[in-house]
Image (tube, rainbow, N blue to C red):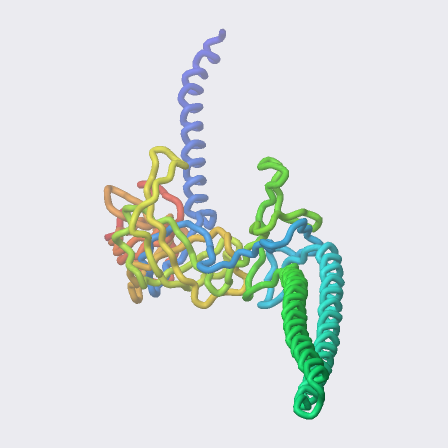
Length: 419
C-alpha cells in the first residue's frame, strides 16, 4: 500500500464515527420532536362535579315474576300456539294455548250424558206425578166407598139383623181398603222420592263433569297476569342433553312450569359487592347503572338493600367473597330486559366544582404525582395533588380547566417538574 493511502485511513477512522454519532443525534431529536408533536394523545382537563364511586358488575333482574303452569287437572296436553318469546306483552294477553280437541270431544260426551240424565229425571218426575194423582183418586174412591158403607151400616135399626150384619162387614172391608190405599200411596210417594233423588244425583254428577271440563277448557289458554316479557322454560322430556325451550307441538305434563313472566316495573340491578367495598356504601346511595346493551345511556337507581352474608365464588383462585347489592331502577326504561349484563357505580361522594383528568393522564416522576401539560409544541411535567380517585378519572389540583394533558408517559427527560 502506498504512503498516501496509509495517511488517509486514520482520518477515516475519525470521520466515520463522528458522522454516525451526528446521524444518531439527529434521529433522536426527530424522534423527540415527533413525541412532542401532535401524535402524542392528549385529553382536556375537565371541571365540574366529581363522583367518588365504587364500581361493580352484575345483571338486571326482576324482583317480581309469575310462573305459568300447565293445567293440573288436564291430561294429554299439547301446545298448539305460543306467543313470541322475549317480547313485551300486555296484561291479559294470551301466552300459551293447548290443543282443546280432546276436551271438546269429552265435553260433547258429558253434555250428552247430562241431557240423558235430565231426560230420565224429567220422565221419572212426570211418572211420579201420574202415580200420585192415581193414588189420590184411588184413595178418594176408597174413602167414598167407606162413607157409603158407613151410611148403610147406620140403617141397622130399620133393617133386618142379617142385612145389618152384612152392612157392618162391608163397612169394615171399606175401611180396610182405605188403610191399604193410604199405605200404598205412602209407599209410592217414598219410592218416587228415592228414585227422583237417585236420578237427581246422576244429573248433578253429569252437570259437575260438564262444569269441570268447561273449567279445564277455560284453562287451556294461559294469559299474562300483567305486562312483562315472556321467557319459556326448558323442556327436559327428551333428556338433559337434548333440552330445548318449549315450542309448538311439545306435549306437556300436568302442572309443569312452561313459562315465566317477569314484571318489568320491578327491574333492579343485582351487583356483586366486594368485601373491601362493603363499608363504603349505604342503603339509599345513588347508583349509576351502565347496561352493556346501551352504552350511550346511564340509568339512575338507588341502593335498596345489601345481603347480610357474603357468598363465596370459586370461578377464580383463590376464592373470593362478595355481597349481593340490589339497586332499584327509577324510572325503568322500557327497553331494558332481565338478564342484561350491566355495571354499577355506587356514588360514595360528590365533589362539587372539582378539576379532573383521565386516570391514564396521571404519572409518577421522582416519587411525585405529575401530569404532562402541553405548551405549544412541547410538554412539561407539572406536579399535582390528588384529591380523589375513580377507575376512570382522578380529581386533582395544580392544573386548570381547558389545559391539554398527555395520556402517555413521556419520561423524565421532558423538562423540569413545575410545582
